[in-house]
Image (cartoon, rainbow, N blue to C red; front, side, top):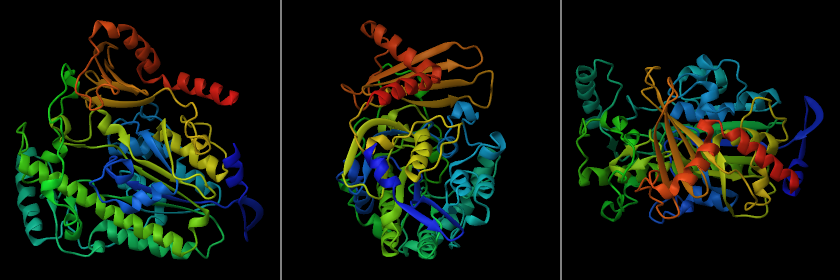
Length: 500
């Protein structure tokens, strides 16, 4: 691979180790609940100039998918290089408690002499963050309450709603208040702005270091609540924001896609039960999501500017990813937690030192489990034996080369009861999105859903029951292999690569 040979020839020597080593640092940027709602992905309405600039300097993956559309499982899979069914983590469970001993991405880099530093949300649980990063994880001190409210009105609602929520659920309040706020405050009044300040300071320290670094920065927004400084709300005219053109359930879809988006309904001011959201509220929420995206884009711009100002951009790999997708009113739903493509399709951008053919875009199907081996290859590190993904570094040389036949995503239902656990195994191919719903206890196939993205890109009609699709269903089912088909697809890809 010509490009890989070029970048891996870049060497540095450490005072503590006179042996030659790859010089590439890694800036690892995670953004919570960020779907491909960005200018570089074709959205002309949203303001994301800094992320768009990063895309223009590297490669943009048009068809990247997470392994499961929920925070913990998605992040655990990416950081471990293992799929959720291997980890046994299908919901927000601790990686260190449920899969102890797994060599994670950051540990692997640290074992190879990298300085490791982190701030923000990379792993989901505080316990995992402490085990993985220890004193290398630094958090900002921001004047926030609960989930990051700053206005006096919002803080009052938090106190009132906590009492209501405890009475309603019998559980703790959780610090939830309104689903959005727009105070006129500085960027660093909120957590993500303060965290960026800390990261910028750390980059200045790295600029004089001899060892390469692995810096992980995890942004919380645009996760709910949609709280961002007023100036980012002011970037948009709410009346001009386009709303979802399919606020209805698909025809003939199985009942396993039905979802009441409780994550949003838990906030004050949001209708409870199955009551639909008003058009006015829906527009405010989408406005808030856009404001949060622009707020985070500004923080990422500050971070990348600091990388350049400290002379570190010339030898730093930059990877940006959103942990899963999100619905903004499509199919009458919000949030993630389904097998619609919107929930697992993610933004993924990569910039590598020495990359001259830019900007690049690829339609190759890539998965989160592929990120671990990719970063190892680009940094010149050996691959741990346990990895279940495939490095997509070859796509930097040839974005159109033959690649994976499919990406696999899982989603569990009734996961608190092993006897009634239903697993949705899904495969995304170049044209189709096919899901099988399996009773994990009995092995019974309960339902199928099939969407044709060539003729139905918004997934509005399930065509799995059409007689003319019987052969196609059999082919996709064999490829999926109840979530285990990745092994055969990876073997096929290896055979193709060996011939190139």
